[in-house]
Image (cartoon, rainbow, N blue to C red; front, side):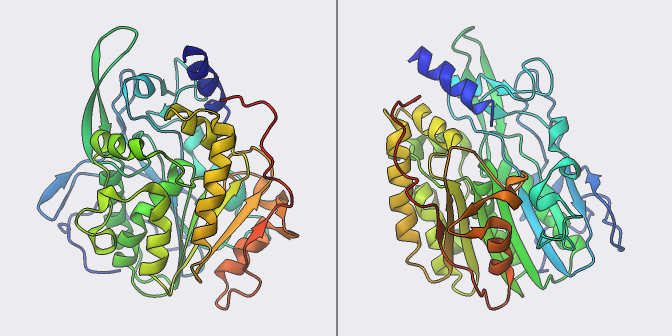
Length: 385
């Protein structure tokens, strides 16, 4: 088991509606004219009588300061993007954070604080605003970084014990609270976008799904597309209970009901597609995504490199029955595409990914269909996990 944990760790390292808040500005406003990226540090906000303060995980050695990025484009369209960075839910996984110093940016099971690589101005793919093939290059952006270990969906302070030292420590799983604060700022700075793309990579794919309903409540007009990048919801049933206990997992009642926390990860996107039949929903993944497979192994699944792909394709087939859902399945083991040059070079089913996304954003969605690599689901001969 110890060998498995070390192998997983090494692999993961490679990888305007009415406001319910007070009238106090959440952070400095976004300039009215189109321009470049700006950083914003949110203040505490009272929403529905509850005072929320944005924070990162506050793991041992981590800086709890939280900020987000935004830019105003020339069109009246808006991208809300949730960044990724692993996850933690128990004594083992939460004891190995990824930090800006010490272990280094690329080590650990989850990003515990903001790191230099979080700046979206240095990212490629969806964030390459000078590329004429980028279908959202003239849109406004809100970039939500990730540093809480809870796939942007927690509202809990959890206590863990370091398995090596026996010392207790706390983690602020406050991803859901952080976004409630950011969303209030978005309400204050954008009126009524004509079109909204709610997207996220890795852990951020889950954040895009869990917060889509809140974004649509804030901005009910126009067209909307939710795009999950490399977050297929392949988890175990036991993990559902762990997720809820550790993170205080938050799902909006208007879609998932009062007991929404019992909703399995693989069902969330499908339920959203049913609840919002006029909106569009999409997912991207590779057939043997090494990072998603590694986390599946951490949940105690043997031969995860085989069972992950089988479960992923079965779940994907069920979602494809919804008329407003499409998927893009690529070959290989790479993890995420939206922040990468692969955004422009990836082709599956004869269509570049950038063009597939552009079709999804068109009013008539002409050419937007399920795309899949040919003969790419054969499991590897030797499982790393």
